[in-house]
Amino acid sequence: MSTVRVMLAELIGTFFLCFAGIAAIISTGAPIESGVGLIGIALAHGLALSIAVSIFGGVSGAHLNPAVTAGFLVTGRIGVPRSVQYIIAQLIGAILAAWACTCFFPVDAVNASNLGITLPAPLPGAEKAWMSIPQVLGVEFVLTFLLMTAVYGAAVDERGAGVKIGGFAIGLTVAFDILACGKLTGASMNPARSFGPALIHKLTGGAAGENSFALQWCYWVAPIAGAIVAALIYEYLILGNDNDG
Figure 1: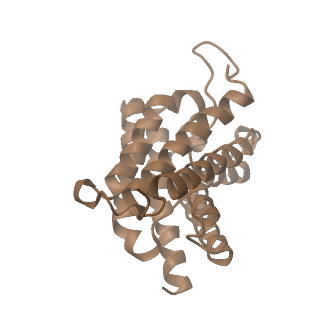
Figure 2 (figure 1 turned 60 degrees about the vertical axis):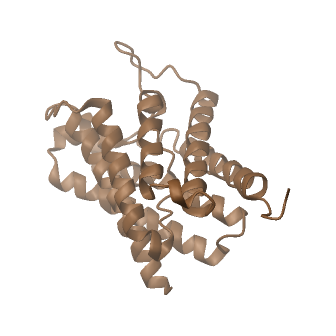
């Protein structure tokens, strides 16, 4: 498959995910207050990812996430040059999605939601988030571990093809991860999903965007580590050798 085709697939697929997720978060908050809440945000991310995987899985494999690409890199399912191309395309897709949301939504709504940036949320009535950095890292590690396991089980392991539901298994994993821990860390599981809105809000948000990159490193380190560990376990312990036992 040509470089342009796979990069375009990764870019548009990541746009699917990030635009739907960011827009849902902005719509939920003031002053729009759509009322969809955390369930709506989880469904927006999950459905968008499911559709994107179904559309682009046959073109690029539909990683749509630098952490997923890193997982496939360490198991030898993608080479270094191609993985760099994938990650660049994913970051561009996320940046464009965040920029589009700033064009479509009122400034007050964008600022109230911090453009959907994934960050630990404060408790009601509190000014600061209660989660420590180790807790943020731990949550994002576990969530992305589950996501990468779902990617392997739904898109790589051919032994259960008869019971699979394609991209929806991956999308539903993202949805339940957000339902479980969206109120803790924002449930990113995806460095591109965190980076895109952080960059755009930093560039366009003025004073409201000053802290856009707070804890950004956590949303790179933990998802990538979680995806790598999940990939290694599935590749070498679950897939293993078909001739084993």
